[in-house]
Image (tube, rainbow, N blue to C red; front, side, top):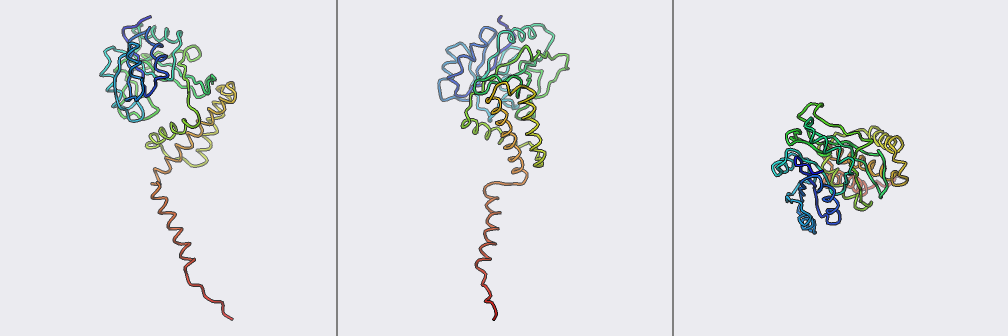
Length: 282
């Protein structure tokens, strides 16, 4: 099962509760490198005790940026790397398909689907996506990459192995509560809004409705019951926050500028109150 050609890279920050399972997932299949964002808990200690290598690297709130990817590529010694996280598990069948693709010599990228669990319930294809999870160092160019994107392939489509998403996928376990998710949404939309175009209110509402209907009804989110519905609503909230922040950026709206606008209205109202009133003539 062990593959000498690949390093499994796992990004961590204060993941002492999940780091063991994440590392155990990959140890039988290859070298494991934990890229730690300077955790303050026992993440690094546990990772080292399990036999993983550790690279300390302070990221900028996400890890697919040009700087982070260049640091990781320089650190690993194998031609291939796998891009993974502590909240994911790759099942045995998918791992075997990945290993076969890597060792075949035919490919430079392996594309694998990721499917979600919300509140512990499997959400089928709702908000699933496919990513270039395993790749040769030179096969993807991350220059100018933006959040929620994964660089540009430098190879032809024939060099990409697309694993069948019905058979093979990464299991993504979302552990956030409503309270913790608000912080995540706020952080990610802050970053993404810097390069997001504004949309009209009707366009924004249409996108949110289309996304919810498509993922909840067509892609099977409803099969997860109430958890699937909440996943759809949470993703719609993300789109709403992103649209609002893009509008604020374009229109230079912040606490100070909004207060200046409010003060102009306040001053007008006060001026009217303070204006001497003419006594009614007899």
